[in-house]
Length: 143
Image 1 (tube, rainbow, N blue to C red):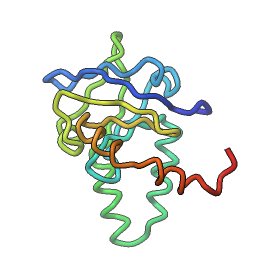
Image 2 (cartoon, rainbow, N blue to C red; image 1 turned 60 degrees about the horizontal axis):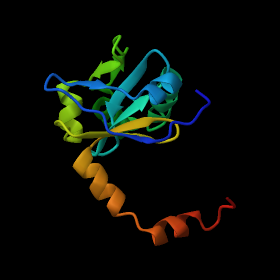
Image 3 (cartoon, one colour; image 1 turned 90 degrees about the vertical axis):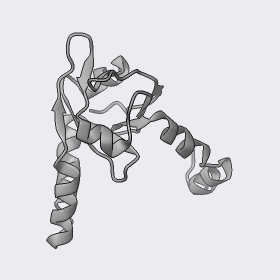
Image 4 (cartoon, helix red, strand yellow; image 1 turned 180 degrees about the vertical axis):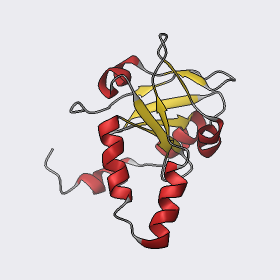
C-alpha cells in the first residue's frame, strides 16, 4: 500500500454489526484487510495485510511478559475481513465493545491505517485538539 489513507466518512452500522466500508479506503487497502483493537478504547484499527504484518512485527519487539500481554490483548480480537458484494464488512461484538460502537460511526483515514470510531468519541477527540497544539507539534517541520 503506497497511497495514504485519508478522509472522513460517516457510514452506518446495522444491529448485526455490518457496515458499508468506504469505497475509497477499500480501493487502497485491497480485497482483504484486518480489523484489530486500537491502542486505547477509542477506535478499531484497519490495516492492509502488509501494514498488519508490519504492526505485528513491531509488537514482537516488546519483550517479556509485558510484550506477551500486549500481543494477547491487541491481537486476540483481530479479524481478517473480505468485504461482501455490497462492500460491507462485519465488525465482531468484541471489537464493537472495545471501541464503544453501537450505531453511529465515523471512519477516518490515518496514513497507514483506517480507524473506525464511535462518532461521539471521535467528535470529542477532534474538538479537544486545538490549533495551537497542532502548530506547536508541526513547528519544526517544513511544510
